[in-house]
Image 1 (spheres, rainbow, N blue to C red):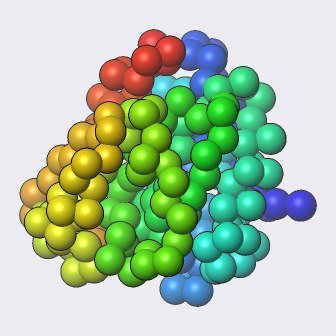
Image 2: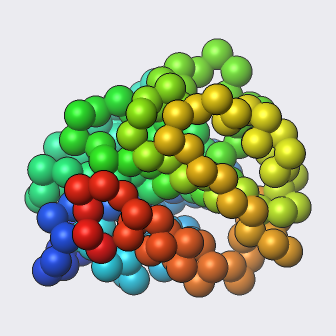
Image 3: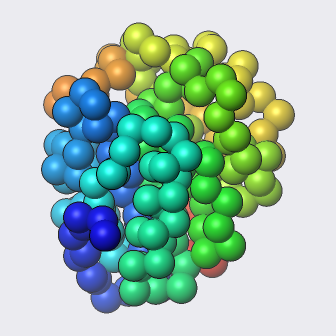
Length: 182
């Protein structure tokens, strides 16, 4: 059973399932960026702790979290490791993916099937990302359908002090997702 928190809100009938950074490097559901999204997104939010740092096991955890969502539709919002794991999840309940600083250069061999999916994806890349800089990330997502990419100026992969900027970008993206009037 996953350790998770659920914050239900009135309004749009979707749940944002939040996926945190790498658990082996201190990532958990209380990470500052995930915490800001959990408390301030205008939709119901669910955050949880991955039970493993293995990509496939973590993707299975996401499936379990989707099953805990109180709504029939979800959006996956992942940061770093969580963004890469989100791309491995192809569930019909998912309306779209919001990917923050996905470390795509480190995911060789992982089945990132959501990248080929026609549902909307937005990739937010820190300008100074040490692991997947904007140029590399743009190359890696080129050809993905329904995918937009934006650069977060003045930030590196760790997004210190940038939770508000990530939140603003996520709220704006939610307003563009078909089937979700945020």
